[in-house]
Image 1 (cartoon, one colour):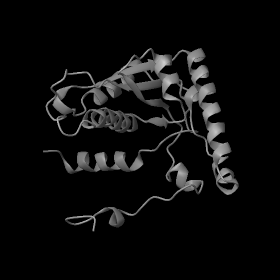
Image 2 (image 1 turned 30 degrees about the horizontal axis):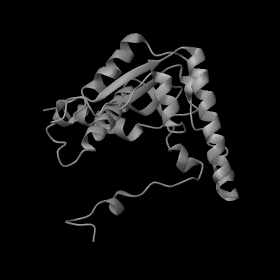
Image 3 (image 1 turned 90 degrees about the vertical axis):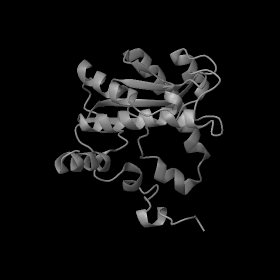
Length: 212
């Protein structure tokens, strides 16, 4: 069993985790720390023990800048699609820290890993994708414990990122994570601070026996 101190530390890490954009210090992750964080991701549970993820580490400044340019274009397109009032709320929200973090980790999902007969995917095929997402969560919590920030970038076209990291069907890139040392972690999540959306209280999310 774990000590009360270890238990409380875990809950603190979960509570402190943030989707980081503007707080990256500009330092690069030390190799030993990066290895620990990736090892934590690789220890995630996976359906049929398939470990359907791969991690592409991107650190070349020119490649980081190229992806940041693509993301900026997608951000502009989203902003232009918004009603005027929502656009004013969205405008000051920073959506990525690609170059500032100095390290991008692209998580990919390979649905063919493990072959045709995967224990646990017979009736719920998405459990393979869910496994890769659990690896992301492990990475995120480990990074928080290491004093790092993580920002999940979702303003991109999947085909662009697929080509960017050299993924071929059926492999999909499912996340670009900006990972790096931070000056601090915000106490309040950015989307709440900027008035985009408030979080739900736990009582609204917990139901007994059914949703009805």
